[in-house]
Length: 56
Image 1 (cartoon, rainbow, N blue to C red):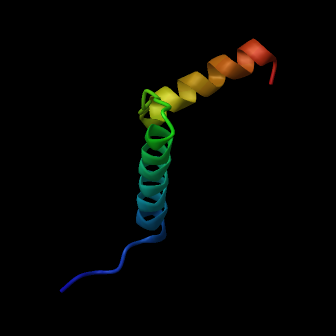
Image 2: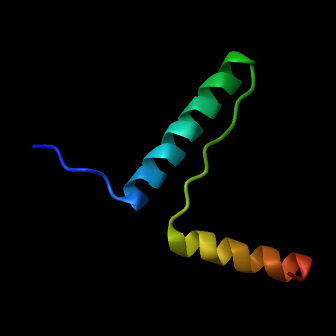
């Protein structure tokens, strides 16, 4: 019996679908992107580095 998704699971699924759709439509237009995947720790470190760089 299938269970309902939590709000966090729905958000994650939506983000992944949105990213996949964006990459697919970009590919059709002849554009290519390197997909960047960061875990929470890496994203936090990146945000801190950007804040230091731009004084935020």
